[in-house]
Image 1: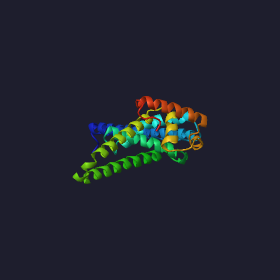
Image 2: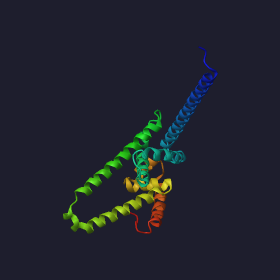
Image 3: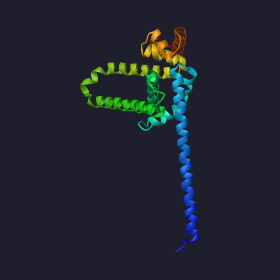
Image 4: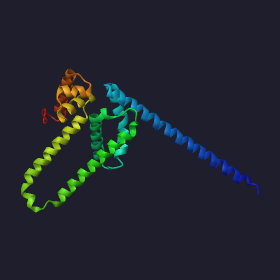
Length: 217
């Protein structure tokens, strides 16, 4: 029995919809491939000491990192803190990336590991809080001091994250990772003189951000 006209029209519409969907998938795949290629090229340039390429890369991957981390964390502060952890890790191990391999899966693996690490730390903290009994109440003052110290460290970490890229790099390498000027220069591609200037400016900026409470520690 020949197909009815209405059935033929439905078949044509369905076929067109399927083709449109396939085209959309292909276009999306092409965009993702192009984005990954761009990021891979920027990372390779960053490994060669191109500061502009590195800055552009960090700016472009931020939305992607937030999306990856949001699969693990819901709290906005946890997401932002984890993203900063990812960026610090990326900066530390950026020379290990192989430009011949896709960049996005490599970055996603780092982001997922840092997100899981934060979940584990939070889990350990909750378990630690659960086992404390009344016998620990006499140490309230010490606990208060510990919390204040944690608050100061958190404020310092957030302030460092807000520094310009060059200053943040100097603080991360020289203060947080305790590298020598020579090591930091070799890692960052910056000259020793530039690192000294960036460090001086960073400490001055941090003192302003922290209201003069942080000093240069």
